[in-house]
Image (tube, rainbow over all chains, first blue to last red; front, side):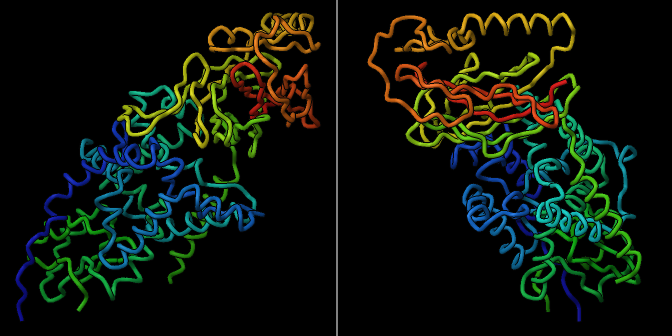
Length: 277
Length: 234
């Protein structure tokens, strides 16, 4: 049986354009979607996709519901991302998230020889170590990773710093400097530009769980086993180092996002996006 | 699940737990609300002592029926120099109204507005500065006036007079007395129908911390203390 190489779809062909559009729509100076809907200027506030599930010790039901109500657009964003991921794969992470997109697009401007390769570190245990602490630390009253280490705050402030003094002020403190350094080391100078997403994003971690559990029901990037010759070109281009190479390529759906880089580079057309057989 | 994966999981969890528990006390987030009868802090902030500079983000929602202008002042002892930066869109596309922030004053605050203010704080450290601050404070007490706020008066249309701490009007009131409001903060004083909700004075606490209020006013009639940050004093 032979399988024709699939033609790249719209999301594959126009990924960079979609990412740039996402930056324009969701990051300063325009932040069009925030301004047009709720009047916010960035993800902090109504659109916060992180704080509502970092429940602190002693919080009552009122406080939890209040947190959800306060960040209702962030809740909608996270729920929408998780549900769409279940059926279609992690398109929020790969195409639409302006924070991950800013890191990846930024890394394209850095020469390859200056880039740091984190692919020797298994991403999933680090990511879920982070998510575990993200959820448990406030619940146990030990502290919080929320806000202090937040790329959803740091990146918009970085983009807005050229325009607004308040955004500059964000970086005049230890947490601002740490977030900036993390963004540079784990995104801008990281090979593939997605190490931050892979290690330190709780939204991405939740999304990845949905991706893993929905793999039987929804569309995913997959390897057509009888076409794969094990050349390993796909592993080199994968920004989330989700592909391991044995005799043939194997995709870890806990890290994969449908960026379609592997699909484009595969000389045999052995990687395609579609429903599981 | 391999042992290596488990090891990486636990090591990373330990590192992130350390990061979560460690706090850099050069910055903090104070959450509050501005409402009729006085502002209040839901989430006071704690800053470390003996630092040259701090960054504080103070966020607050405007609780109905509060409406008007609000001046923001940072109080503290020793004197703290602060610059306020309102968090606003880089390019305002004009879809929504935002309160204007000018000369440390919010203009046209309306119910359910939310404000976010970045406060860059610098400490005056020299002995000379401290002496000057102490002299200024004493003079202020002797005068019984509140200089930062009286300066604000001419800017606000229809401003009423500001009562002194001794209960004397600085100038005769041209308007009818506003309805008395219930003081909500310690140190509140009610003066001839005007409520001066004094911001929390710099109190020496058990841990050596002093409270530094961000104080707001509405149409020069009511004093609202929205404070919220707290800093240690040396």
